[in-house]
Figure 1 (cartoon, one colour):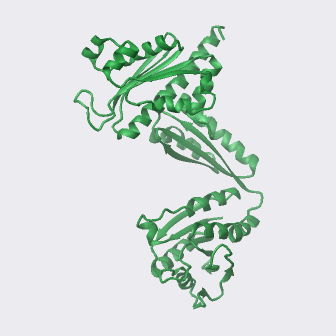
Figure 2 (cartoon, helix red, strand yellow):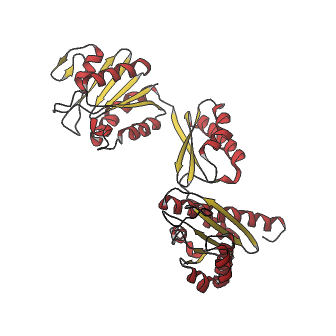
Figure 3 (tube, rainbow, N blue to C red):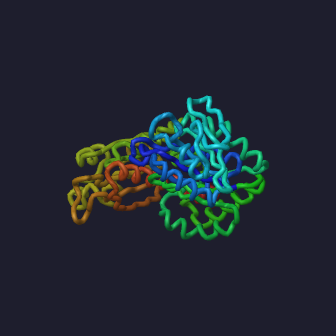
Length: 394
C-alpha cells in the first residue's frame, strides 16, 4: 500500500514551527508494516494544497493531509480537498466526504476520495494529528495489512564516510528484495538502519543477511548495535580484559573523561583523567619534556606520546589516551592549521598515534576527537584481548 503525506502550513516553511507529524506518521505506519513513501510541504494556499493533493493522489493509494482545517481564514485544506475531488463544499466539508470525529480538538477531520486515492484531511496540531492517525487511519490500514510488520536493525559505525559505506554495501543490500538501508550521520558516527517489511520471520532473515554483508565489508568500523553507545562498548571491552584506563586531555577539555564516566559502573575500569591545557601543566603533571615542546610544539606526535606515557606513570593504568590539538577559531599556523589534532592511545607496550585535521568548528571538532579516541580504545582493547587469548594468556 502506497502512503503519501502532505504537510500544510506557511509557518513550517518559514521556519517558525518544526514539523513533527511526518516522523510520527512514519513510525506509526511502520508498526503495521507500511512505509511512508512520500512527503511534501506546501503553504496555506488553497490552490497549492489542491494541486498537491491531485499530484499525490495519482501515485498513492492513501494521502494524509496535515493542517489547515480550523476556523481561521488560512484554514483552507477542506476547500482545497473539495476542489481536488471535484466536489462542492457544504458546511465546511466536501460533499460526499466521511466526517471523522476529532475529540482531541474542535475541528473534525474528513475522508474524501480524490481519483482512486483515499485522502484523510487531519488537523495539523500534533496532539490532534496523532489522535486522528491512531483513531481513524491506522485501524483502517491495519485491517488490510494484517500479518505484515516492519522490523529494523541499527548498526553503528565509526571512521568510514557515508559515501564510502554506500559504495561498499549499498549495491549488495539492494540485491535483497524488501530490505532497505538508511544512512544516519550522528556526529562523529554513521548509523546504518536496516528495515524490512513482511512477516516477522521473513524480516529477521533479511536483516541477518544485511548485517552479515555490512560486518564483512566494514569490519572493526562496526562497533555496536541498537541503543548501545560507544563509551559503553569501550567499557565492556576494558572490563572483560581486566584493563584500567586513564586519559590526558588538552583540546577536548575533559570531554573524553565526561563521556567515559557517563556510563554507570565506569569506576570498575576508569582510573583518572587530567586536563593539561597549558604547556606548564603538561610538563609539571605529565612529565612532558620542555625540549619536546620547544622543538615540536604542544600539538605534535611527540607531545601526545609523552602525555600518554606520563598518564600511565602517574595513574598505574594499563591503557592511556592523550590528545592535543587546535580547536580554533584562532591559533592555527600554515604547518598546523585550525582543526589539527594529534592523539595517542597506549595499551601496555602497544602504542598507536594519529593526526587529523577536522576544521569543523570548535564544538564539532571536540566531539570528533572524543569519538575517535573512544573508538580507538575500543578497537585496541579488542585487539589486545584477542592477542593475549591467541598466545594462551587469557
